[in-house]
Length: 148
Image (cartoon, rainbow, N blue to C red; front, side):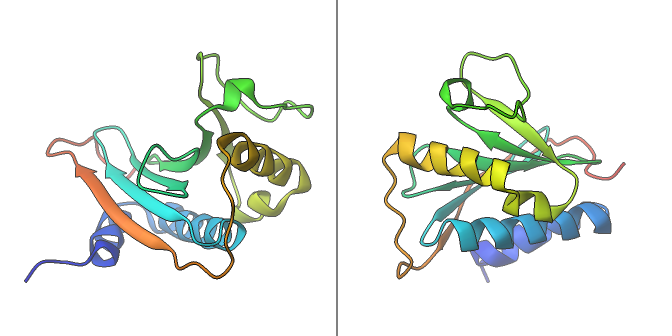
């Protein structure tokens, strides 16, 4: 019997140390609350488990990535977003990230400003009445170890 997207996600998360799994679940819960009606796109890649948040199944402007020892919050167009508090890391042409050590950082006013800027720059109209959607986009057959 085929697994649901949620069952698959649960299996992907279970590959991580319990502390990283808990952190990721808490971060996702907060992002779903902050981004109502978002579509979550799951990519179980070679290097990391990535979960994107966007208004459609197209390129998500915000995502998280789980590594064996940490979780990052990514902004697809982060290089173009205002970052007066200099929270974002990275030197790429587009993407910037913030390392998430605790889920409550998602609720931090400075991080919320970045999330708001990403949503606005994407033209995303948040709909509190819309249901969230979960889609598994890819599963890499070869993966680095998920536990440290």
